[in-house]
Image 1 (spheres, rainbow, N blue to C red):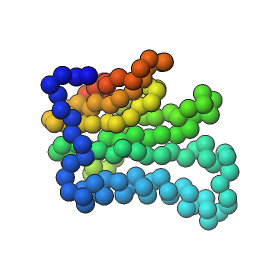
Image 2: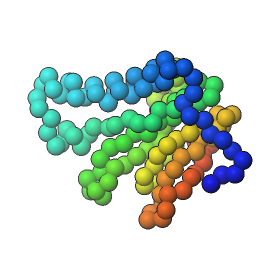
Image 3: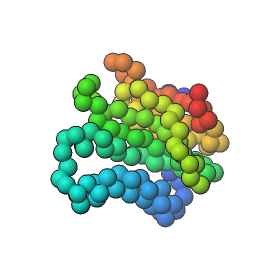
Image 4: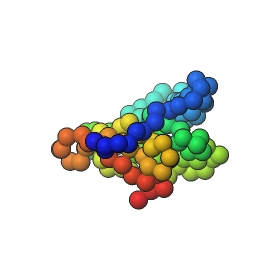
Length: 135
């Protein structure tokens, strides 16, 4: 645990939380809608679906940290990546990938650091931090 540091939940109004989750929901269900119109979903199509989870606004509201989760059938687990995207648009940047059980991204109050919980190999889950700019 990191002493003397506090990390924020997605603060602000309910509308701010709703707006943060809306793009994630649309992105998650768009492939299903397109495929439903064309044909039933097959296992091959399921392998390409990516779930978006845990969106969190930065304290200044200019960035969103979130997780992308997709099935990894080879290793019989889910591959989770911590990403950050600018709220004005642009491509999301992958900050952390390859760690097991990656979850709960949280911003530091100044927005410079992201904290998250993950496992390395078969160790117990721990809290990690990374600069929000990557690294």
